[in-house]
Image (cartoon, rainbow, N blue to C red; front, side, top):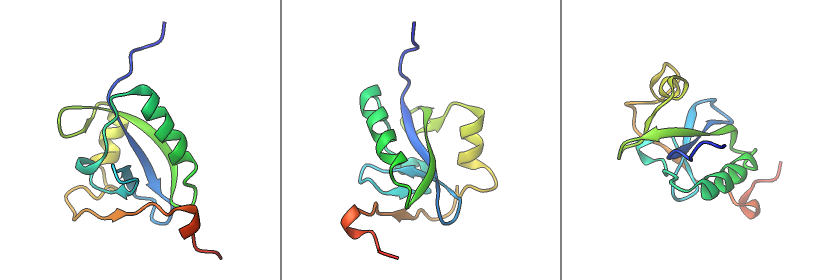
Length: 108
């Protein structure tokens, strides 16, 4: 029997900086966990994870991270460390990176 779905956010690492980033409701990435979109629906969360995995020009290693509370707070030790640890930008001004659409992707 599978476990019930737990509210989650999408966490990844910025491709250029390696910093932890979170998916926003505008399909951008932010370093501020409070601006992360929270998924209550398993199907939507899995679809957005698949979308994030295709964003190889912006992020690497996207994962669904279980959260609790109105302001998303990670429930696992791993994700709490990612949100507040030495390589997070917790407490620093939030920066959001808009998602590049395929037609906007610069050609190299």
